[in-house]
Image 1: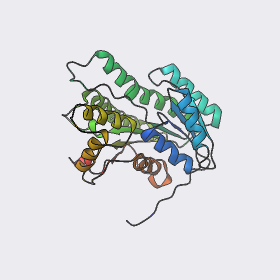
Image 2 (image 1 turned 180 degrees about the horizontal axis):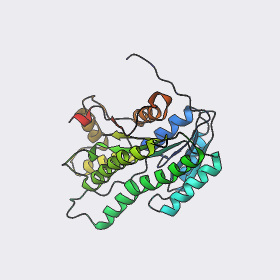
Image 3 (image 1 turned 135 degrees about the vertical axis):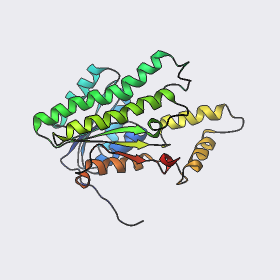
Image 4 (image 1 turned 45 degrees about the vertical axis):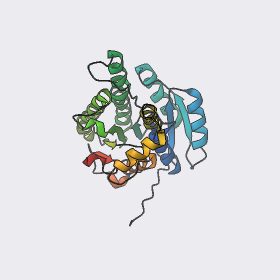
Length: 268
C-alpha cells in the first residue's frame, strides 16, 4: 500500500443521520477525529446522548446529539434547525439513516413495509438534502452532501426487493439533485456499500443462522466475507474514508458520483 491520507475538518460542521451505530457511527467518528463539529442522530435519545458524549472526546470539535425519527418530516425540520442552532451553519450532510424491511417477496410484502422503506431511505434523504441545500444557498456556502446507498440498488434480481428498490431511488436522487445543486457550488455524491459489518447485517446473518442447523451468526458472516473478492466484510471505517474524501478539497471536481466501497462486491 502506498500513500497516506489525512484530513483536517477543523471549523467544518456536519450532520450525520442514523449515526449511533454501524456505518453512520463510523462516519461520525471519522469526522470527529478530524476535528469537525458533528451532529449525531438516531431515534433513541439515550443512544444519541451516549454516542455524542463518547465522540466528543475524540477531536478538537464539538459533538452534539439530536434524537429524531426521520420517517417524519417535522422531525427532520427540528434536526436541521437544532444543528444550525448548535453550530451556526451546516457545511456537510451525510444521509445515512435507513431501515431494512423484513425479507419477503415483493408480492407478499405489506404495503406498510414499502412506505417505511421509502419514507426513511428515500424521502428523508431528499427532504434533509432540500433543507440543507436551501440553508447552504442562503449562506453562500460551498457545501457537500453525501448519500449512503447500496449495491442492492444496482442489482436487478436477488432478495431484499423493497430495500433494493429504495436504494435504486437514492441513486437516481443523487444524480438528479447533484446536477441541480452543482450550479450553486454544492456537491452531492453517494457512497455505495456492499456487505459491511453493522447491526443490520448482523441481524440478517443471525436470522439466516437460526434457520441453519449448527451455524452461528459468525459462521454466516465469515461465509459472506469469503464471497467478497477482497475476502473480508466491509468495515464502517472503509465507508467513512470514502465520505471524508468526497467532502474534502481533494474531491472539489467530483459531482454526482456513486463511489463504490464494496471490496469488489460490485463486480459480482
